[in-house]
Length: 94
Image 1 (cartoon, helix red, strand yellow):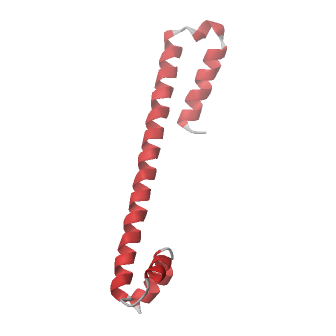
Image 2 (cartoon, one colour; image 1 turned 90 degrees about the horizontal axis):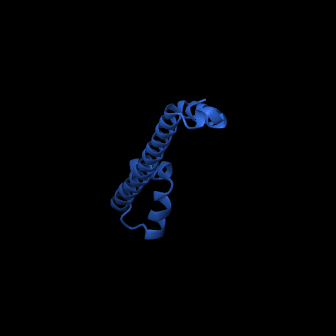
Image 3 (cartoon, one colour; image 1 turned 120 degrees about the vertical axis):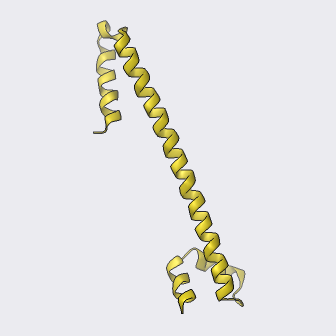
């Protein structure tokens, strides 16, 4: 169970209790949980964006290397090989 899950469970238990629902500490815990969840989602989105950009850059690099190594290869072949880096690497290094 993650820290965020523990905080959520703690908040839900406090919210279920009528006396604790309006307590300042309960509101603070909810706010902290919400902020941490929001930051986590932001970091996750940024990580996914970086992964996508990295994947695109690697694909471009492979295509450039293939065009240099296989000057007569049609664009369709370059595109196919760029989606299969292992096969492309074996052709480039041979």
